[in-house]
Image (cartoon, rainbow, N blue to C red):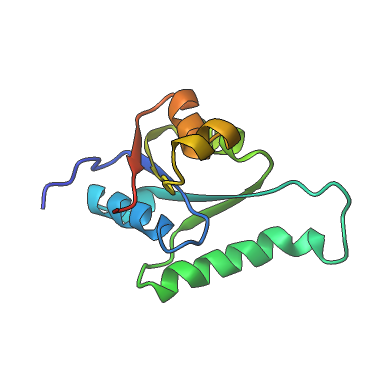
Length: 138
């Protein structure tokens, strides 16, 4: 198999959906070593801390790790961030010196994206590196 991004960092935003695993699979196919893949998950900010919220990053990291391992992936580099998803994903890719972001588009439709905006669309517009968008099969 020809590997496209042999030694570059690939950022994969995951939301623990089955479709987001397609982005991870695509990234895995592009590298020689999965250590070049950086998984990022962005948690919404908490306005008022609640009991147990101080552990939510560790709990999310453990759940994310279990999720990817349940689907046959090895232990991988997982970063959990908090804040506005687009800003965090773009900044994380920049800080990681990523050569590529691989992100799924959930395919909600043009009207929904126009009214609500799209994380994927915004990442494409703001990222300083190339972005590969995976669309669901119709």
